[in-house]
Image (cartoon, rainbow over all chains, first blue to last red; front, side, top):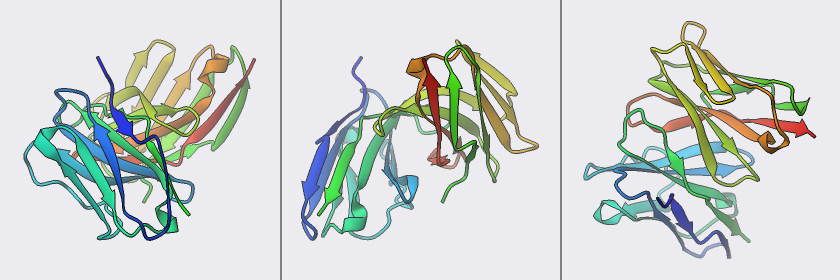
Amino acid sequence: GAGVSQSPSNKVTEKGKDVELRCDPISGHTALYWYRQSLGQGLEFLIYFQGNSAPDKSGLPSDRFSAERTGGSVSTLTIQRTQQEDSAVYLCASSLVGGGYEQYFGPGTRLTVT
Amino acid sequence: SQQGEEDPQALSIQEGENATMNCSYKTSINNLQWYRQNSGRGLVHLILIRSNEREKHSGRLRVTLDTSKKSSSLLITASRAADTASYFCATDGGANSKLTFGKGITLSVRP
């Protein structure tokens, strides 16, 4: 079946603009994760959704970052008033359930803030 | 913050040789996973080993876990040029199964 998909694959934006990144998880997977990967910080957890439970937002670096998951499927990560330090690859992953199972990653969105 | 620390940071071997990569972590885990990444994009899941397991095999991959030493190793046997990639260990602490990644090991397999 189809894997995790993300769009856009690349995004260049000006500092101060808002961006939206999209993730389509594997059908039937109830858990969805966002991570980001940057040269300075490596791979960092951002946010976790599990079914209808309240998301775990403990990894979001600032209140400029927010995420939604509509209908238990597609997720959107929004970054408001982007800064240069937001430049990174944003990775989405899904898992059958949240709890000790392998996570399947999408190809990522490379965000460049100029 | 990084939980896993891989060792070495970079490894270069000849095709056909075995590659051994090590990972150490700091806190208790539910499981430990190894991932591969090509060209800085999506990660590919390789193998998951649970905290009550000591060794696991998958094809040319062998993973060991020593929870008393908080360490794991990934062995790739009979390496191929296509194994050239970055390899990450990631620990799952169990609370919400968020993965905490190490900084990665760059493996180069020379043909």
